[in-house]
Length: 491
Image (cartoon, rainbow, N blue to C red; front, top):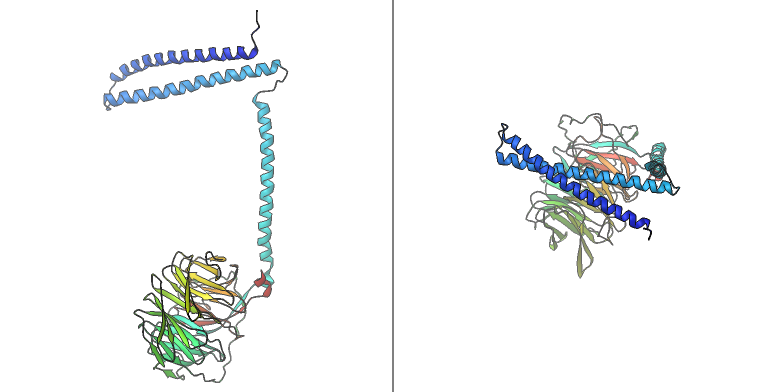
């Protein structure tokens, strides 16, 4: 008589179990039907506010749920029986082990090994990050020092813009939202020329000439003269570290009417008036050489004028919304215009026969300003609270991005130190390097700093006492002495 193999016997046992399982399910279904019928009869005799049809549907649904759980329970019992059978066979073959205990031990060993690896990785990462933070706190000797040198007053309204001459003598010009432009001689910190009868929104300098943009849809060319008055002593203010400076008061101080000195000449008639725009002229800047000037307007265009003839040379169109700023390269015939359409454009006039234009897209809100650096870089600031550094040779993506907590107004870049000064709506002025690393924050308290929105910043490379100037809606311009150690700049 042939002997039946172990595998065929196991298969037959499994087949019999499945058959018995199906018979048990059938018996269960039949008993459930009888039970549901009895329950339905009982529910019909009970008082309920639900309709009889809805109660029957609910009863059927609950019966189906109960059957599903019963089937799962039966399958669970069958699986347990199979596990016990397998354990018995392994015990008969001499490979007995305590069921799940051995598996649990193996899993525990593996889990402990992976946990130790993860903890070691976290410790290494945490140690590296904390070491960087601690090293930054240890470098107290290389912290930036910002000293407030002088506050310039005289305007009766908020100051929109300020600019510094690139040649000697060094002169600071401020443009007010009122009806005057004021030139300040930096040597004596006295007002030397006042241009009245003009709603100034921007000011720029050329040798012995200055340009101003106005809200009356015109731009003006002014000729100014510098007379050296008797120098006056400047009060010495102790140096104050500006990093993490404590703000003692967030409330605006009471407005005080301040009038400048009356012993300065006033100019009421401009040398040249440029009329071609159909909207507010928001900015003006001189092209290299001092013979042409560029203006930006809310009519979505920028114009290039010849100063001697007052003729319109080129009209730079292409922006979809109002322009906010324009800037020229210090050594090349390049112009950059920024707009509310979230873009800024680069205009190339180096070749007289070809005037190319490149569009830079990278901001999500109004581009408030875009300025050139010494190299082939452009720095743009926006109301989306970011400042980005771009390479003129690759405009697809920025090489550095600075994220702030407030909208950024007209920025400026130091040529010698390669530092970006960011004036903010929240009355702060922050300094960053070209790679996006924060260097300092100018102090602001009840006694020093701006009390309202800071509109503009300008660097002065040839002045040792004041190398940074800022202005704001508190009707004052401030001269700062910024000392950035070389070690901090390299970092």
